Length: 94
Image (cartoon, rainbow, N blue to C red; front, side):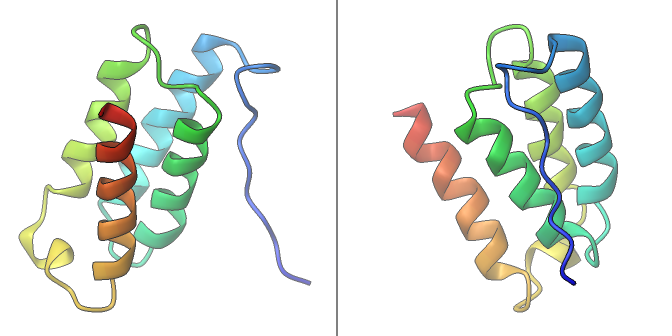
């Protein structure tokens, strides 16, 4: 059976829980072997509307962590996940 990770949305998660989730994602997104899963979780938070003024700094920490190693962000096997994460954020920011 395939496991699916899903964080609670803003409807049933407190700001504290969202911040804790963002901190965990930021820690995992640095690891190239965990990047794909972590980036998808970050996107779920964005799509759920969990990135608000109170959580924006923590979300930016996720993006900073994603770019913390140049080897991971230039890895061809991760390129699609990087592109999806940053293009989705750019679309929302418009």
